[in-house]
Length: 190
Image 1 (tube, helix red, strand yellow):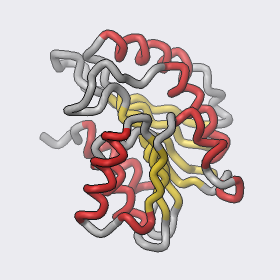
Image 2 (cartoon, helix red, strand yellow):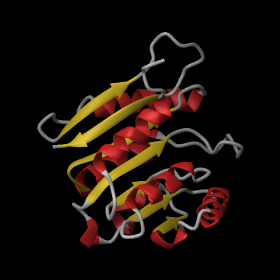
Image 3 (spheres, one colour):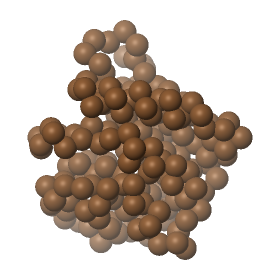
Image 4 (tube, rainbow, N blue to C red):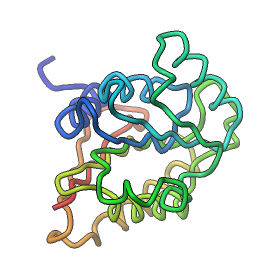
């Protein structure tokens, strides 16, 4: 297949906007796969800030980062992503190159703890202010569960209202797959 699958495409989008020395955010660290990817992408002169409300996610990500010796330039917060603007140092606002969200629940964790539209939309809105020009937010939407459908619908309503003078919004999705496959919303700041 020549078309890129969802997760590799998400990574490609981030590679297009972030590199050595950049500041990036993993808004939903989960088990740390994206956090490790981002840490490798920005190198030891860059920095990754990661957020998750679950101690299990913080522990899993910390272990994964230490296993590949990338923990020195990553700061993890056991807070919801709706606190991004308050937590990220003010001097970095306007300098964030990219951010990623993987919505839904922690794989292998408690499936009753899920991302919700109010906090996700708040975080995206804050990040739009914090991104540098041509910075990007990549959102992987998992909507195969009831809460995921609610979040998907609210998120889609929200991104359609973003002023095109402020950001470009892309939807990348396979439309002929079964079982509610995940898809991407990418928001590039103008």
